[in-house]
Length: 294
Image (cartoon, rainbow, N blue to C red; front, side, top):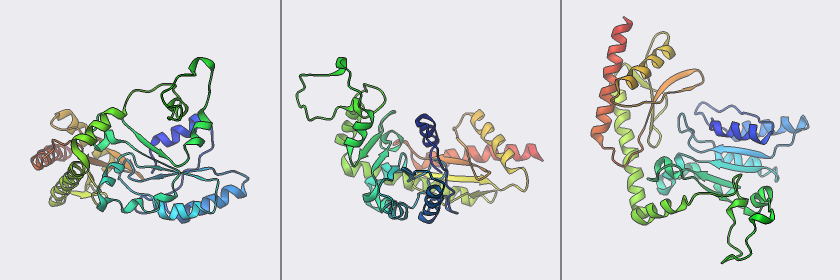
């Protein structure tokens, strides 16, 4: 259930990709990876990178990093990249770090503070175990880009870390947020929004017309209308009606042929009454749509 950017990266790099099936909880398991690696090697292919997702976009599922890492230990040349774009912000809280088990085996790790850590778009952080391997891959050093007089010649030169030669000063806004809120403030922010998602999930489960697609995870609730027939078509019409009404805006998703609605709590201004407001808007639109369908 990797993000679409993973597939795009493969297209840009011009490499052959193998998309692996997930389990019933939408997670990649070590046994699945081990089987795929064996088959690829038998075919004469050279596996070199495994993408592990911690907090998938559609359902916030977590690949089993511990199992995957143990499998990759048998293949020293395999690079393990961890994509924690959304869920990575929650790891500021100790109680949400369970999915990180095995992270010591990762070669790189990224998450997007702009998704949930009070930083505006765009801001993405990346840790790399051996930065020289990134630099060696991207280094192009024509004479017009060289700087003879640098305050610290050992400081990282980030034009060798990426495709563009230059970048905006994104780090400053993250630094200010960390200075303003501190660890405790960021933890309170995350815990509050996880609690708000639980409030919304309870509202969903109180209405017999609805069901959750999976248990609420962090700030994400995935749910759908129980429909005897044409459920996907019904959901698409429901999303259109809700967004046309204009009280709230929803983005739907579809996994394994099942279309469903998603509510993701992300604003520091969100309060319990906002959860109730959003749910009432969904209820009104659902009632009107079902009445039209009769």
